Image (cartoon, rainbow, N blue to C red; front, side, top):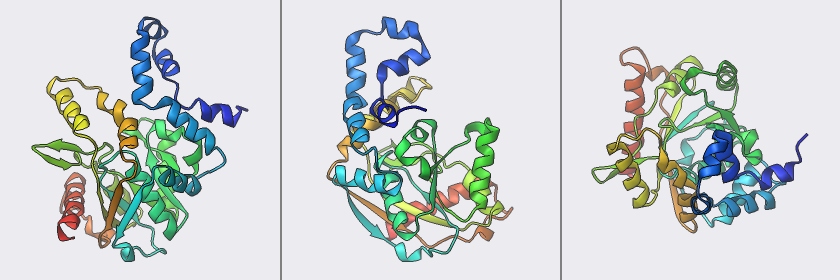
Length: 277
């Protein structure tokens, strides 16, 4: 069995990550590039924080993170949330780090059995594993699919970022990319009403510009994601506003529209919440 403290202390290791992809790549990567990568992913800062908080798990770690970054929360519409209901909380994803942490903190006060489907990287954070399940990207992992279906069939509250990516800026407007249809199908299949949830926030102009230039240059790899840790540290001391809307009954999502169209409909409702505010 691995030593937990060692695992946490070395959670981010740029050289190990590069070597896992290619030993040759590590050998020929200049030291100044390695140093730059360590700096922008805040390797030392994050490893130090995770080690210091090694005894905190789940919602305790969530709250410790908000305290560490001095994040203030402005919550509206929480009275729409019935603690007895099996909701899917569907939210936009403007920040890529603290928005998810803030959402878990707020809903964790309503009920502790909350679950968030996340990517492989986040699944490896030992402090949060009790709150996470792995997403089944492209439907390629049968075991992950079973975990997801079993969780949606349970009584827990599900938190969900349907875009799966941090919001981008196009023509001066910051908005999520297309919302995937999975949460609509799960709503209908497991009779879960959807709570449209708007999170106010943004990352730096550098991040948006980099993302847009990557697309223009035809680069498929989301290189801007390397900067998400850096963007997280830029959120220190800021306020995050979360607005919950009126739940949408699962019966709404009938066959009059395709699931992808219903996903776009819910996304539109989310952004309309902010305009009503």
